[in-house]
Image: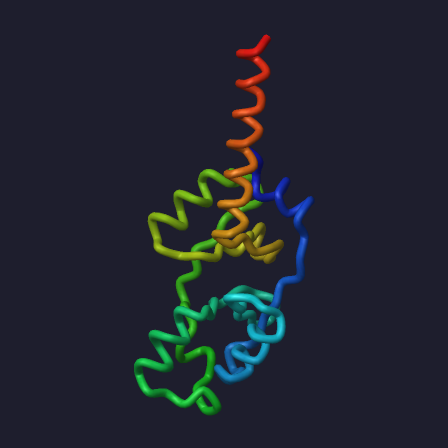
Amino acid sequence: MITVEQFLQFNSRSIFSLKPENKVMDSLFLMAEKNIGCILIMSHSQLVGIFSERDYARKVVLKGKNSNETLLSEVMTHKVITIEPHTGMDKCMQIMTDHHIRHLPVVQENKVLGLISIGDVVKEMIQQQKTLIEELQKYISG
């Protein structure tokens, strides 16, 4: 199984972030524009939270808060579960399943290196299974 670092080398993409003092509406516009499901919340180059579509539904809409007035710091997830670059993709799947989350920031020495989504993990695990099946078929057929 490949590591997160290996995955990011071949699947690099931009990391989108906002500040805790930004409004929820700012994050909604950015997520819609970039077609992404979460925004990292950064303060002075440090990861301080994450805001996802799930946070919006549960902490803003269902609580009747105004997206134009509510600060991200009020509704973001403060305790962010992160992984290091050497983490295997199978371990990412386990963490995501155990914590019911869909995004894992990749952090090393307090620096955000990337973001892994559940879609990334599933895609990689399917590819690994496909490769294993092909190798087994070659071995069996001789």
